[in-house]
Image 1 (tube, one colour):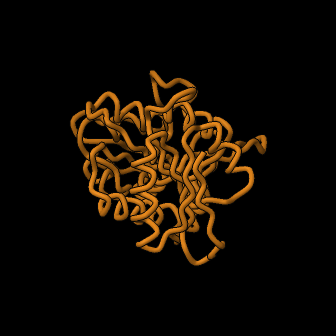
Image 2: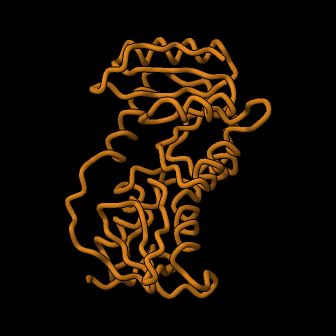
Length: 238
């Protein structure tokens, strides 16, 4: 494990890089440091888990292909544990199915290797902006048996049960709630949520969200697909 610890500076974003390629870690660490980030690096998921118990991070940069546990498995475990820390995945796999697998496990963004370090910086800054920006909406929405407060990435059941949403799911539900009752196209959702409009990215995220709010995902009542047009959320303002 390669850990480069600096004095904590609250005004700078703290990033944990998880990659077993030492050359990539050194390159990313050096470049992010030069652009105002505080960076720690580890070479496997287990070491990342240990470090996250000791330090607080603003985002993770995670490689897909690693020994012991893949980046996809690592991120999926984080999400299952309710950890919604922003995650940017690095992958040498360029096919759409591999990108979709990354989003399905809960990643917020991805970058294919080889990549320009400057693009990594820009993507991280964009990721931090959209996951940490203040929420101006104060309306609470009733979606079936769930209430959604746009200030939080969570759903609250009538029994008081809290269901956590990932950052991507929260952004997507906010965008749909803002236009509740109206059809929102895939391209518009992608733009408003800072997601890739290509492939099936939006469809995958809608499917993940639908599993959380619908009793029957095969016959959805609240998050509906409008064939050839986009998606429509049926919700009431509380």
